[in-house]
Amino acid sequence: MTIDLSLRKHPDAKCEECPLLEDSVFVPSDGPEKADIVLVGEAPGLNEGRQGKPFVGASGKLLDRILSNSGIEREEVFITNVCLCRPKSNANPPTAAIKACSHRLKGEIGERQPSVIVALGNFAAHAVGSWGMLTDCLQEVFDSEKNDC
Ligand code: SF4
Image (tube, rainbow, N blue to C red):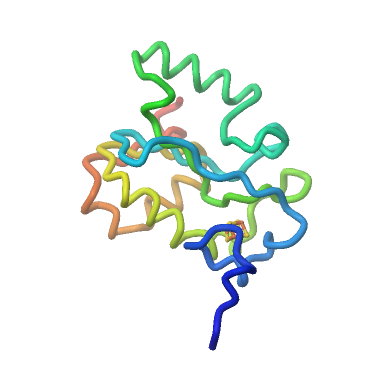
């Protein structure tokens, strides 16, 4: 079967199998090529879709404050989402979309070789926690909800 790459919003995602391919706003990950810390959220929200950048608006301000209080520059951190496209009406990302975007997410994290992955929310914790293969490049998987952050 020939895959039409023009159907993809990200070259490493299986967008042609994703229910968010059409009628959704694509927000790419943000951060350096190598990063000690990777933050993984669920999916872009309204403000992220408008600005084309993850974790902006109220959540971004809170994140910037937490990072700053920890002595970490936002520019040092790689920020991504389980799904790079914003589901309509801020709905939870469908399972098929999470699956379609998972190869891309694993690749982006693996390339950065982080020491810590911070999973922001249930979807991220589940996605990251279910990948045995990531343990090779991780020293710690930090579940933000279990740790009350
Ligand atoms: S969520 Fe991921 S897999 Fe789905 S269309 Fe967007 S980039 Fe492609």
